Image (cartoon, rainbow, N blue to C red; front, side, top):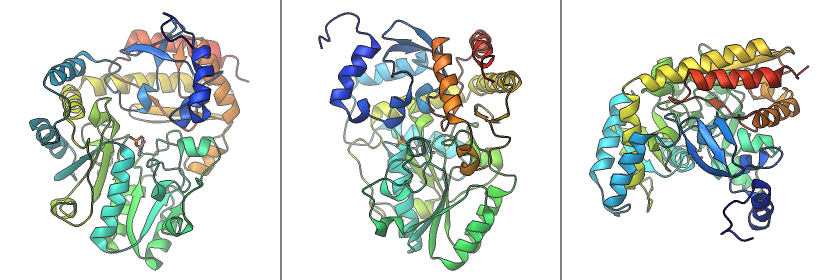
Amino acid sequence: MDLRRCSILSYELWNEAKNLFAGGVNSPVRAAVKPYPFYTRRAKGAYIETEDSKQLIDYVLGYGPLILGHSHPKVLNAVKNQLEKGWLYGTPSVAEIKLAEKITKHVPSAEMVRFVNSGTEATMTAIRLSRGFTGRKKIIKFDGNYHGAHDYVLMDAGSAASEFGVPFSLGIPEEVASTVIVCPYNDISCVERTIRKEDVAGVIVEPVMGNMGVIPPNSNFLKDLRSLTREFNSLLIFDEVITGFRLGLGGAQSYFGVKPDITTLGKIIGGGFPIGAICGSRDVISYLTPSGKVFNAGTFNANPVSMIAGLATIEELEKGNAYRISEKAAKILAEEIDSLIKIEHVVNRVFNFFQFFLGVKKVENAGDARKSLREVYVKVHEALLREGVFVPPSQFEALFTSIAHDDDVINRTIEAFRRVLGEVH
Ligand SMILES: *Cc1c(COP(=O)(O)O)cnc(C)c1O
């Protein structure tokens, strides 16, 4: 294909991509966009402009990180300034201290931090840390919770893994899988039974499930997890890769008032650049190399560009507007969608992210979510794209809002939803 041509349509790019990438993409959910993935030319605020010159209102927002919308000027300027000074040093830089100070100031359980490059690396390291710290082997995770793409967390994982019906990836040795026990979300009795009889190093949980649509925790679920893990000397790991700095500066642990032993962060704390972090108390985090014996390292760990972008993002979040605007947008939209759908359905919203499920009355765990009318959801997604609104292509992802989702954006979105949901019987 002649890539010098000034305009190449998405379907031409997609046909070329299918020869180059497995399934045409580099992360599976992107292939679920119907009728074929659109290619993005540029993006600003709440809008994406496609290679087909369409403007789309974006509720995917990079699958979570862009709480300030696309190309926020504060982040853009901070990154530009940093690029002038170099982008990789292989040495510490001031920016990592400033970002870690923000995190330890705002996130209640965080006294120390280790920066890595993705949420996947963060949960992989957190699990190793819980095993190294306790000297135990088993991990409890929850059905439908997604913690990234490494071997220890792909048992009954959400989003991409569920969408394609591969809860178990090929290539994971039985020996690895046998060290991870899966309980239904919001089912504390399963955790209690398991923790009594097994050698549990850690319990890893999404404090709000954001990878099976949106599923909030039952009123006592997180508190009960806290008291059980404490009683049995296991570590409680909150995977706050989505909820961290989304449900407010203190994340889900502030929002619900439950303090985990280890917190994993990612997405928002990099302001749209690659990042992950493991945080916790001094005694736990000190187990990481070089002060401790649980290994972690990375060429790009704490690279100055991600640090600066994250810092600029948190400074903007501290002003409060982003939370006020994104929550208002999510609330209005969720209520509007709820009233527009005429068939049985439920809309699950927590603060500034939400998802609607068709054909079911309640969704409290992954099993409920799997019963929803997913093929109808996909049709709604496709129809909304034609109307200029980009919602996740999968039922098992969330709609996110940002500081850029102002009244005008919301009104246009509601108009599009009216036209589309009127057709759903
Ligand atoms: C996205 C996500 C991850 C994985 O993060 P990556 O940066 O994609 O590796 C882990 N946990 C949760 C809860 C996530 O939503």
